[in-house]
Amino acid sequence: MPQIPVTILNGFLGAGKTTLLQSLLVQARGMPGVRLGVIVNEMSALDVDGAILDTSEVISRRDPRFAAIPAGSISDAQGLKQFAGAVDKVTGAGATHILIETSGSTHPWPLLEAIRVHPALRLHGFLSVVDTVTLAQDHDLGRAILPAASHHLAEGRRGIENLLAEQIMFASRILLSKMDRVSGETLRTVAQAVHPLNPFADIMGMQWGNVRLADVLALPPYDHARVATLGAELTDWDRSRGTASMSGAEGYRLGSIVIADPRPFHPQRLWKVYNHSLGTGIHRSKGFFWLPSRDRLQLLWNQTAGSIGLEIVNYWKVAALEDESLNLLPEERQEMRRRLEGMSPEFGDRRCRLTVIGDRDGLADFADAVRGCFCTPAEVAAWRAGEAFDDPWPASTARLSQR
Image (cartoon, rainbow, N blue to C red; front, side, top):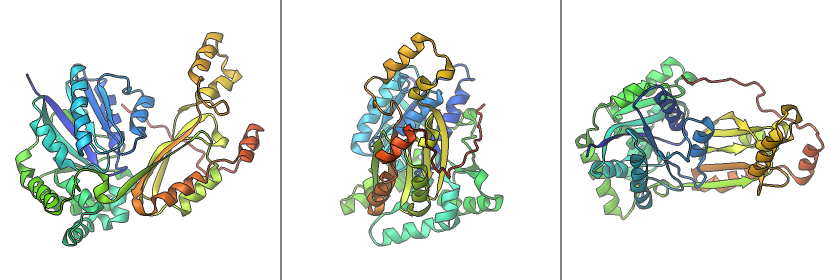
């Protein structure tokens, strides 16, 4: 039986893997004969990436060519078991090429080994997505990664810098994301700092996932022999210390918390928390939310390190039902009400669901600060009465088109 080619999209938290995946899926629509299978891994139990793909309409979680592995790393024992089942699902649906988006805390080596020995798969590309902005701001333009990783090893432990370095070292192609947010000089400096970690990999700048699917599909078979020694050394390092640092987030003292509530965030308090309580240990937070000042809009919160993006994902169903100007037909209103059955009688399908990922120390404090942003009963009553709320978040919007 011919083996199905696989490409891995790996990289640290918030680097831009989902944006890249969306771009590749959009391009696949215009390529006859290409049927992409998708396996998405999330560290959190909240499958935000799967929901984003749903709302983008490039692929649905109900599509047989889609499989999700939430609540952990695809490289730990449980994740690898789920991976085998996910492969069976997407290959059985007729996928001609499989894209795997790993969680940001995933170490490459266990997954690479699992693909190498899988009889139905052949790896054609390990793309390491590197956040240029984060390296520039938090890692001295990338120059601090190797010294910090070496320091951790000398102390008999492994930290975030080791994960960043090793994600790059196993890559066959390195994509420096968010290049539109840094100067050309910064991009070149980061590339120069990253290159010694993996002199065998191409390095490319990327913005908004602008990588050609044709180039990804044309990547040659992955050279497992090149990284075999490194993988063996890391395996021996874990074995000699009785650790499992390559299995997932626990090895890097990373944790995650899910925040879920039907109430809206108070826009002013949320702004204050973002500007004053977001410490360097909060690597990633993402999810869906709403504000009383923009109660029709389903918003996406997308934070990486010290930067945040807000996106309009969709309109809440209950908002459409409440809007008399839409002139919905009786049967359309009936169907809308059916979909809202079992949801909050006060807010309908409006709700906030965020996952926060960061260093275990300080993670709970930040999550508590975010929970303090939910509107009080008095503020909810004010929203119901049509009162205005101070809203410092940007009011202008920019539309992105994917071709």
